[in-house]
Image: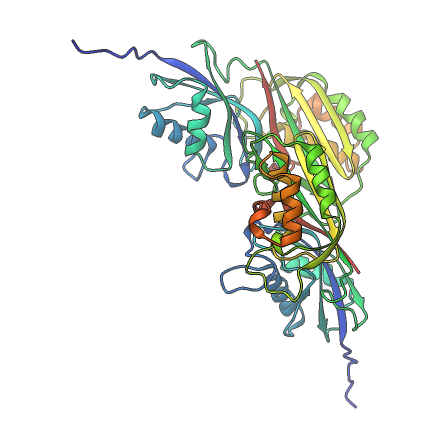
Length: 252
Length: 252
């Protein structure tokens, strides 16, 4: 009698870190190397099955992640926690799987997100530090921390963020709730932190750009209030460069 | 009557920062891109003169610098402090000139060095952080900070460091004096700092490798004492990877 293996579908949740410098972003694209495709390829090599990896967030090109979450289904009998080691052996060194675990087949990495935290690093310096150039953004001008912190308070709560996203963004609603927004200064490095139930395309980079424009006196708090009220992209600040942005944590 | 410009030779001192990741090291080599050659090329483009750039230290491939010092001579009438801006416009973004100033023609970037400080960053982590992988080294094993700090004391003062350098190193004397050696831990990152009148090839990386081998119990303090006494490279620890090493400061 032939033995039958008990192949049972299991849903695996991955926590993923990556250096976004050499990626076109999270999502698969024809134009280049994406994190999603790299990890899917590694899963396929390992399991000999076609993999469909669902990520919590579509980070842009050059944006980093220390806590991206994704899930995939597999019939493989590999113990869930072993995916971490096996996939890291197959992946390039700019992506690492920090943990792998079995989750309920009902878990969904994108739809189940309750909130997310993004951070952005900006260094106030006349000369870009060549060693950190891919890990933060640099600004030559003086920034007033106090006025930026006042501006950050305006973002708290539920708002229509139409003025704070890529004008090409196609979404059902521009309403998002920001529950925490802080700015800390350590030496000449500003760390901006945002926690909310969701973020529109480029939203964090535009929020930081707005704070920076307020901090250098190019925009007033009144301008920001108007941008929040009338959804005019031109009233908000510039879109900051991607390399200062980190997807830090996803809450379920 | 024809006006004659007063072309007077001036010696310019540069402070240079670089991300060593994509360099074969400081020194010009046929095998690839060196910092010395990149900066010399920029000077030549700027001044239309052949440039000979003398650096304080020949950092290895992948080793970073936040305070490399170098000098060159020029007949150009460019104001000394303007070299900084003009050269940065010409250089790739992994090298930056932090300052440029006129110095006495007697100043020599290498021969006048009184002491140097190098630092080394090592992260104690089971998984390499992909974002910091080119900026520090990673160790999976537990390290005993107390025993490493005891070991660091053994390095202080004047010693024959023959056991702590690349066995191919060709030098007149292996005697060097280390005046400060500290190890600090912040979270899971160890920062090793060394100040001395000079360092042999690979010496800092072997000193750190020895401290790490002591910290994980592979070498005893007695082994290190013997290596310092008999100059046996095999008694000292391994050579750590280059990407954790930073040339921090040169003292004249």
